[in-house]
Figure 1: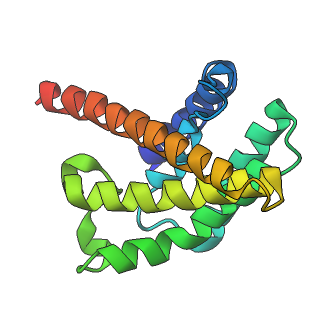
Figure 2 (figure 1 turned 180 degrees about the vertical axis):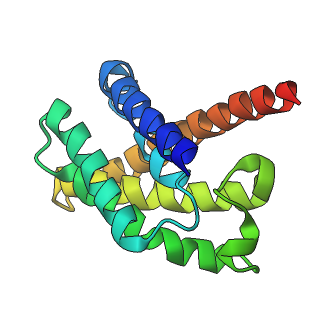
Amino acid sequence: MTNLVVRNSVRFLFLVLFQVLILNHINLGGYTNPYLYIYFILLLPFATPRWMLLILAFILGLSIDFFTNTLGLNAAATVLIAFCRPYVIRAISHEPEEELGIQPSLRIQGFKWFFFYSAILVLIHHVALFYLEIFRLTEFFQTLLRVVVSSVFTLALIFLSELLFYSRRKARR
C-alpha cells in the first residue's frame, strides 16, 4: 500500500512538472497541445474511492491551472474525466473492476481495452477543456480539429509511456 502511494505521488509530481516545463511549450500550428498530465488519472488503481478520485483530479487540474494561469479550466476538465472514469470502465469491461487487476495498464488489460479506455477519457477531457477555453460555438469546427489533433498526440504519448514502462517491467523479470 505504501509503495503504491509513493509511486503515485512521484508520478503526480513528474507529470505536473513534465507538463508545465516541457509539454506546455509544444504548440504545433496552434492545433496540437499535448496533455499528458491526465495519464495520472488514467493509471489510478481501480479500487480508488470516487471521492478520492475527484479530489486528486481537482488537485491535479488546479496544479496545472496554477502554472498556466487558466483559471480552473484544467481542473474542470480533469474532474469531469475522474467523474466519468468509473462509468467508462464499466461500459468497456465485462468483468467487475476487482477482476481487472490492480490498475489500468496496457500490459494487463491488453491493447484494445486500454485504447478504448484511454481514447474515451482523453476525448472527454479535450472536448471539455477546449470548448470551455473558447466558450463560443462560432469556432466549433476549428476547435473540434484542435480536440482531435491534440487527442491523437496525447494518446500517442500515453501509449509511448506505456510501452516504455512495459518494456522496463518485462526486462526486470
